[in-house]
Length: 304
Image 1 (spheres, rainbow, N blue to C red):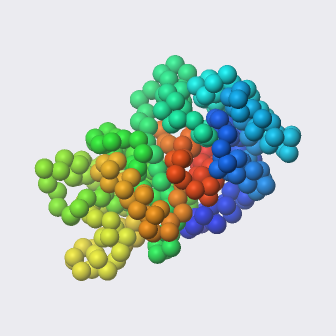
Image 2 (image 1 turned 135 degrees about the horizontal axis):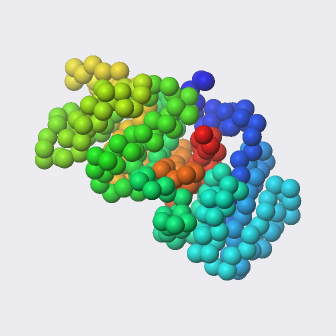
């Protein structure tokens, strides 16, 4: 399997799969979500189950009339009920992916995280992965966690690594190069996450993550720019060639996300991990393209 180097390659992989994924969309009432649905239908890689609250049912029935064989519409009395119905459709095997429309993220996550009827298996950690296509980088760059875990502890870092490495491999990267991000290359007990990084590297050396390269702490520039590593005298398969960045906390990762989007002219995609099926939870500020590629990413990575 060739690595997917950009979002054009992501779409090529999706089309080559020759399988339409079933996507449950909760409250598909906004222009961006409708754009994603219609573009996906035109691209031919997904069928949709639209769960609309009663006041906005007309939006979904309008799409259904255009694609009667590819779109089913479910009516819910309110957004919370719509979220519960969307989660149930995934749990019962009627949908492969869950996607958020114009519903508050907390409301959707309440249904996703319900201990009896949700999508997070017991013992799993909920996390988020972002994939960025950056004009000045020669491949897609994966990073976590910009959306869910405020300050990861060792068990969270371990789960994030396992989830993200699996996604990298599904995207055609058999030996992911992973950088553990910090402001310097030094381990310091004043920064507890650097002690966790040491433990993660021990796990990697023991083969717990399979064939991959893991190094850090290091800063983002060292991880993604070979010249920076040369200047610092750091030699590592990761330096200058990182596929995946693991950030120490949500502040740094989310700031990186927003900075790439605003100043780096990056296209972004992202989804929740740890759930029994991919969950696409785009930000209200995300572009239509970002939401579309997020769904495409989830469709490529869904299933066993």
